[in-house]
Amino acid sequence: MNKQPIGFIDSGVGGLTVVKEALHQLPAENTVYLGDQARLPYGPRPAEQVQAFTWQMVNFLLTKHIKMLVIACNTATAAALPLIKAKLSIPVIGVIKPGSRAALKATRTGHIGIIATEGTVKSGAYTQALRTKAPDIRLTSLAAPKFVSLVESNEAHSPIAKRVVADTLQPLLHTDIDTLVLGCTHYPILRPIIQNVMGSGVTLIDSGAETVNDVSMLLDYFDLANDSHETPTHDYYTTGAPSMFDQLGEAWLELKAPMHAQHVNIESEPTHFVDAADMPTGKTIVVASKNPGKVKEFKAMFEPAGVTVKSLADFPSVPTVDETGTTFEENARQKADQYAKDLQLPVIADDSGLMVDALDGQPGIRSARYAGDGHNDAANNAKLLANLADVPDDARTATFHTTLVLAKPDHPEADLVVHGDLSGQITAIPRGTDGFGYDPFFLVPSLGKTLAELTAEEKNQISHRGNAMRSLEKVWQAWLEEEI
Ligand SMILES: O=P(O)(O)OP(=O)(O)OP(=O)(O)OC[C@H]1O[C@@H](n2cnc3c(O)ncnc32)[C@H](O)[C@@H]1O
Ligand SMILES: [Mg+2]
Image 1 (cartoon, helix red, strand yellow):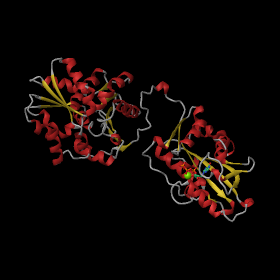
Image 2: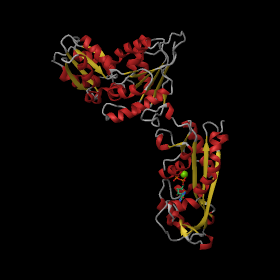
Image 3: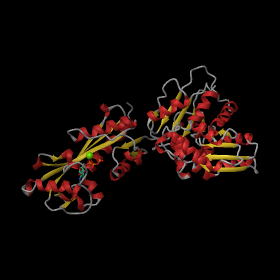
Image 4: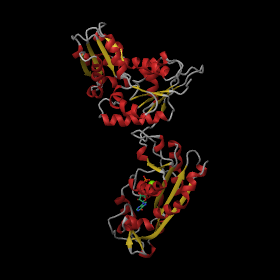
């Protein structure tokens, strides 16, 4: 007895045509499904990209402890099945061979038609699978790239669908094809229209449904079937919008209860096979910034200690957290706490800025948008100079400040907070070309240079951010390892 779920992956909702058959043929099995709707369609993508995306889906489903994987997508099967099969220790089943077998069984004229995505047609996977078994079989392949979007946009029963299907299948009419392989798991949703266009003399082969026969056989062969009498669970995940997934899925599977698909982000999953033995033993921390300069600095600190560093660029769909606090610390906490909660990973966030004494600490937390929303350094500098026009040299003192906050998911009380400062003076004339922001106007009196006249390394030795990082260096490891 094995209660672990069977995993199904597809570029969208099409793989549900396989799940439908699985629910029918294998009603005791637990299932987990992932549709990569955010990156659909797979059909026109290069094979290497389909392989990378497929690995990301597989790596996500492996975290659900699946006992068997069904690649319920012809494009992904064509591009990645052999690679994935070679690496995983669980049985992996694609949709192409079962579909081919059924087509050979069905044909009488010896002429089989195949409709599929461009990627599947180009791969020649069906031709190869069919010719291996029947070298003399006659085959006509046709790409039907528009069908996937018809299904995903819930147009499968509309008059547009009828027209598109009729136009696309035109080249197959008036041939002696008596069997047509629906070589994409989305296509069975269009089955009545396809059948109508092809006529009743043509047998349609649903590659996905045929696949479930193999799943059933392999469950028995490997003694993996679930013979418990508990009510099975069916979990659905999509990288796209769950509401759309639910709508299409509930209708197709004729569910009585709501589907409740969950949104997931798989973009940070590895794009290749990850051997459990190669998994980083350390932890992951996310830098709450897309600024590559900042990310690089944090990598230099964390990675030598075995910590994987990611940034917001690795999680494109996580909602942006606004800075609405009144202090650097409030802003940094806000970002760290919210991103940690959303990503369920430890996060480091920072907030920094320039405080000018003669301006009562302005621009302060508004440094990035001093001259208005957006990050316009030139406009910010111009406003700063104008406001300091009447202030004598010795009164133009200022401080750069950084607050860094490390947060763990759902435990804001355990935040680790460090600060760093750098004192200096605002010059009237800009000097130097390095750095960013207010650097050309920020004079470090002990060096007689502005920050823009220092190399990145020299700046880091004395800067507010460098000082905060040095404070953090002593304490972050203990904090990260501490269980809460
Ligand atoms: O929050 P992220 O996306 O990381 O980017 P940001 O530009 O808002 O970055 P900060 O909060 O760290 O900085 C706020 C502003 O303060 C100024 N600033 C901060 N550190 C600076 C430095 O080292 N040199 C010059 N200007 C700096 C600069 O104008 C920044 O846009
Ligand atoms: Mg900021």
